[in-house]
Amino acid sequence: MMSVQILEKDEDSMSFVVNGITASLANTLRRIILSEVPCMAIDDIMIIENDSVLHDEVLGLRLGLIPLKTDLDSYNLPEECECKSELGCHLCRAVLILDVEAESDERIVYSKDLVPEDPNVAPVSGEIPIVKLAPGQRIRLEAYAKLGRGKEHAKWQPVSACIYRYLPEIKIDSERCDGCGVCIDVCPRRVLAKSEEGKIEIKRLLECTLCKDCMTVCPKDPPAIEVQGNQNSFIFYVESTGVLPVERIIREALKIYERKCSEFLEQLSVKLNVSEKD
Ligand code: SF4
Ligand code: SF4
Ligand SMILES: [Zn+2]
Image 1 (tube, rainbow, N blue to C red):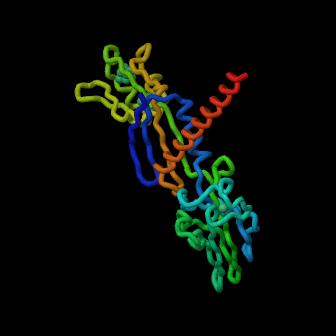
Image 2 (cartoon, rainbow, N blue to C red):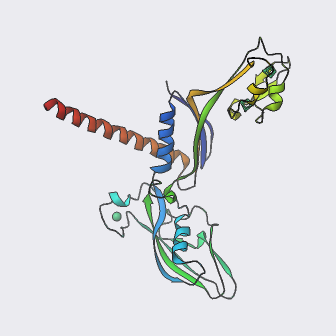
Image 3 (cartoon, protein in one colour):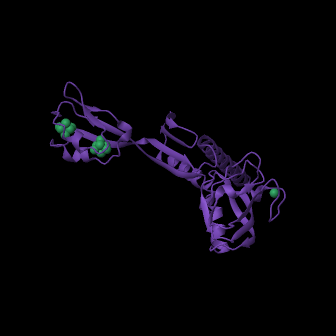
């Protein structure tokens, strides 16, 4: 039976334990989150004026990497939009305007200087520096943001971290353990502690990194402590770049996985029907 236990959660990050799955399923979820859940990023730019020290191409790369709030319910992926236009329409493209001039003093252009036409597609943070302008320099451009997927370019990756690791399992042989405490001292994560009765206790299981140093230093042969990863339970940590709430990213990943399974089943039935007729 699969079960999920949420360990910590806020708007941008979540850690949770999933029991009852295999490493291949855990990795499938990780890869879908990284490369298939769409989000907004600047993809085309029309530069009207650029007096800054940055070449247009470098400026374009910097703008592309600014995380933008994503409204998945109002925008289409360009390849799925009915407009079929290279430039896009209001359903598959959002415009942001940048018009900044340094007058008598130097001026840093920040992401907050990008003015979005749609407030739902604005930079996640206004404090990302783009370029420094010397007095008299100016940048004027129109940037076009589109939905895309991480497998096309990392700028469309909705997460800054998506990792999983095996859930640790620690067993202490209480008959052979003499409570010397060497394993407690060597543990870099302070997973183990001594009880009032002098017994070794597991205090912070989820902190264990499976380094097995405690097994190595145990003077008993074989060690009186055994550490291993549970092959069917995983601790996930997912951190959004802020483009979408982390919960939405996970939900979207599961929807994509469900869609892929249905497509696979559909194709399989078509092929089976054909071969039956043959
Ligand atoms: S495996 Fe490493 S982290 Fe885990 S309890 Fe042992 S020493 Fe600590
Ligand atoms: S090092 Fe071995 S014998 Fe000593 S307390 Fe830890 S498990 Fe017990
Ligand atoms: Zn369109």
